[in-house]
Image 1 (cartoon, rainbow, N blue to C red):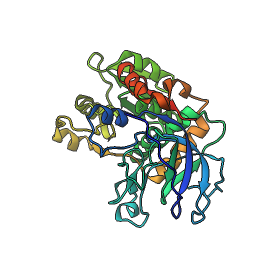
Image 2 (cartoon, one colour; image 1 turned 180 degrees about the vertical axis):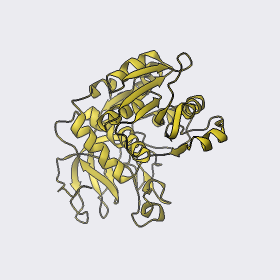
Image 3 (cartoon, one colour; image 1 turned 90 degrees about the horizontal axis):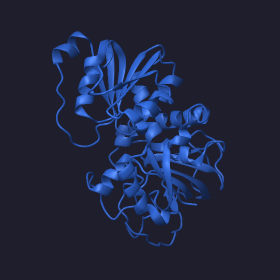
Image 4 (tube, helix red, strand yellow; image 1 turned 180 degrees about the horizontal axis):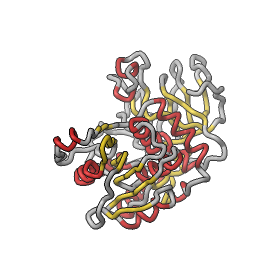
Amino acid sequence: MQLQQNTLPHLRSGEILVRNLYTTICGSDLHTFCGIRQEKTPTVLGHEIVGRVVEIDNNHSGKDHAGNPLNAGDIVTWSIFSADPTSEMSVKGMPQKSENVFKYGHAMITEEDCFHGGLAEYTILKPYTAILKINASVPIPVAATINCAVATVAGALRLAGELKNKKILITGMGLLGIMCAAMCRDAGARSIIAADVEAARLGQALAFGADSTCLINTDSLPSAIDLVFDMSGSPSAMEAGIEALGIGGIAVWIGAVFHNRKIMIDAEQVIRRLITIKGLHNYNYEDFSYAVDFISRNHQKFPFEQVVGKEFTLANAHEAFEYALMHKPLRVGIRID
């Protein structure tokens, strides 16, 4: 990992120049750093970003995704992807799976295009990127997590349907898990059980809306669950979650984002108990909007300031990744400004 200097190009039609303010290191960034995830290189990692608008091309609408005027100086976050709204997948409500989707923090550096990741001073936002202004009261480190972790959990809640008065189990209490607990609490869940293999993370989950905790592999999982969210990607956790579901239960899986062993499920029980299993990768624009609204309303209700365990400067990005791997906080932050 090394610092490079490049000259900012003139904006193309419909683009926006943003001065990056803060980036948090996501799990997928760590997977790429360690070689678990293969990415085209060289690249600029970092997609959980918040920044300040510097320049708006004249061919841009001049409005954010909610229709509010955009101006230089506005604090914004944006979808981790840019997708043609007329594409088949966009029309189906899955723009993140569009054929020619562009993903910030995952693209290869070229001579013509290199400002597209959080570990840089600037990002150039492409047309069809959903941009939303951030309330000035939201702390910058908290705002940085919106466009990946929070928006992905928002998508999981959308797939789950009505949460009010439901009994919910969440397996995996990393950032996705605690965000899920907080969002389920906000949505009116009757009971929220947090499950993980690490006792320390279970204690943290209680501050984010969980009513009780369960140490996987030690405690017995509850039964008659209405909804189970797996944020861990662990096959055994997903299997245990299916077994915990009651009749008509729904499982939403978002944690399994790299290869692991096959899941073992009793098909007869899935049928007899009318179980539904849903999967989600990334999110859509509706989820992104929900995530920004959720943080705007709840950033003081839950201790989101605890999410970032330690901050580094851009010049010390390599040390930030090493710290994240060694100490495993929910997030490590990199302050750009």
